[in-house]
Image 1 (cartoon, rainbow, N blue to C red):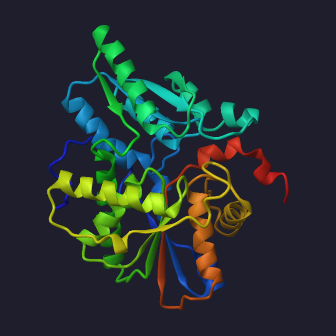
Image 2 (cartoon, rainbow, N blue to C red):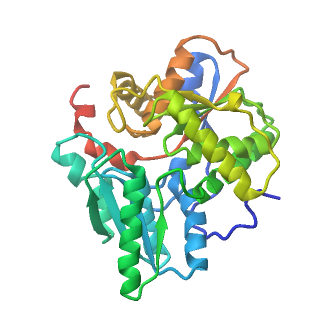
Length: 337
């Protein structure tokens, strides 16, 4: 029985997502490199957020909500997918875009995710800070109170770690789903490589694979905070998810691995290695990564492979969380061949 079975949810994702061998990459490095295609979840270009939204919206509907409120960066995949989910479920939706990334290019503010948000007709608010999670959540709560006075019932999908992380339940499911796929093929994973931002994906996935008895390292790649800060965030969220589920699983802090080697120059700002990784996978396998999450995560995987520490029988598993819509906000990626 799944750890998440008792929680209300809706169906938003095309599941199970594929598990594929990256044939050309694997041949180049003489190591099995697998990709879990959570860019293929459906819902307005797909991505990891649809798994998380299934649980948030399940709770929203159970509470009788008619409007969703959420917050994120200008090029937030979460914001884009929340709007799509709201439209699919017949809900109103308002989003708050934070000034989190210092990019003045018009493409960053007009194309990619914000273009799709406008296309789907969401009401947009703006928040001037990018590193004030508590303040961003408070602004949503204030807006929810305004809507309540108008006779509406809003459900806030929060950002900070101060709230029950229902979204992480989606990646508990994903961890269980992936382990089932690996077991059917008799594949023993050597290492998982996943992005670590809000930490809901990283946390849920770690719990899901551990619940299945797998102890392979889950290599979290930091995309917003340094490794020490991110490890603390994952540990806090992990305890909250375990308490929410009511599980007795014990995951020591030593098994929380966070790697900030690709973080610089900051959130939403790709470095040379990330750009190279995006181009590499596009040209080797025809698979598109994004500059904020999946690109930095695959860049770390490439460094691991180039280090020559893996053998032909090893199995590295990369969790692709999507985000390709934001590529259109970074035209400089293709200015050079």
